[in-house]
Length: 476
Image 1 (cartoon, helix red, strand yellow):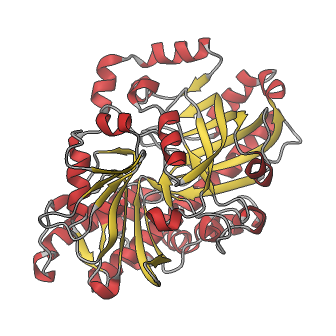
Image 2: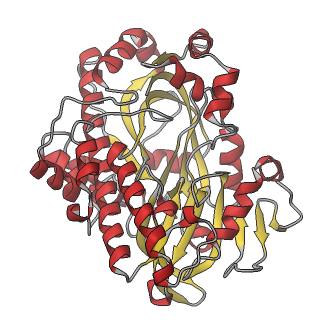
């Protein structure tokens, strides 16, 4: 990316001045090296988002930003409904509420190494993964609507996990305002057989080792120590979320002219927050969030059952669950006032800082756990929301490594079998139904997650807490 169009506000903060149709500046948080490696389309999309009605303060992009549909992946933008603000299906994304949850195991590396192959095989047998994967759960129409309203709370009532899990999930496991009536029959049909499944793409269940601790106080608050083994699950709302995005993007494109919205890119299709269409999309999108929360809750129970088969006394309590690909109603300070805003985070993670009232009491002093997935075979991270991050980017941080190349390019460069063998030689066991999928997610197809995390830390978005090293990966 050419840096001439940016003004450097700090070593890890770059501003694109408001020009042309832009209503606010664009701001990217990244090192010079990450900026130079970004596609030019990121700057173009940041500027396009900055032109949308009712946007507040700036159009932001995180250190892992790369080209996406309408919004850049890694994009953050907040809108004020009272100033004509909009909600954008492209600003949420197709995999609504894709996210990461991390579980404690109480085990150390030596415990797992002695049974690693068996654990990998049992997890692979119990966790449905891959394109078109289906689970054992079959939902009726009434049950689907109840799931879309209840999220992880519904899953717990159905016997998947416990009430204790809910305290460590955003929104306590259920987003208010979900409207199953706003979700199409096609979207519901696509989901009825997919609950409790990982799906494909970059989704996974991974057994990980806490390889290094950077912030001892936050790690202690989160119950982490060097040498601990944890489990992380990365997945979202599967076919239902994708269909919601498809349905509403089409409708928003058609409705935009009548709403007086001139789109700089049809992929930025949006609707006024106070319009009937905007309200219907919010209801459907919130149902998609609840679907993802329920899905990860069911997968948590399946993981617990798999671990119990190998380690009978292990319970896997939940550390935290955080989503990306959402639009959330939040109150933030803008200048000298507190304002009610609709914050889009596409490929970006909520990262509330210390003292925030919405955090679990035991984490409040440290700040929100921010769960960062690495690429397959590389480190993942646990960060903590930094003090002042709400003023920097509405309490947001990066969500992962961010792709460095397309899936097609990755397929040209690597063969999945070779990737699996190379990782096995390093002691990392991969289980996947698709060598093609493995090749698409090869480690070098992504940016250096360490560089991304370092930029987020040094930009003041989140604080490094612990680095997680992969031991076993169940890959879709």
